[in-house]
Length: 86
Image (cartoon, rainbow, N blue to C red; front, side):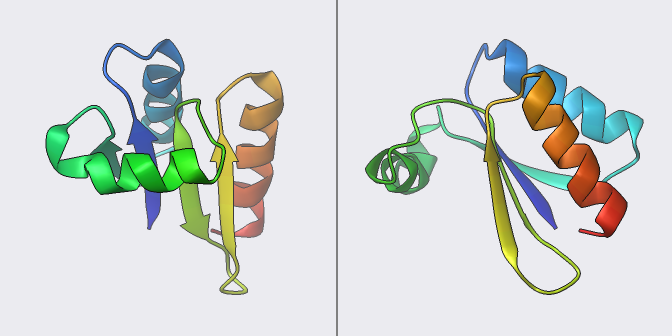
């Protein structure tokens, strides 16, 4: 299952979710702005990730992957992952 860690009022988060919906790819959204998701927010900050969205999943080889941000380059990375089987 793909997870999208998003922030409130995040343009790129909305673009990533729209992209996944258009491709009919199920995902779980975790709102990092929500108080109950503070542990996830701290975890990614400790990794040095200070942008959203953070998109994670496991590929067909059971390897975890992570993409943060959603510009043209990140969209191409996600397309490649989806094409290869996520």
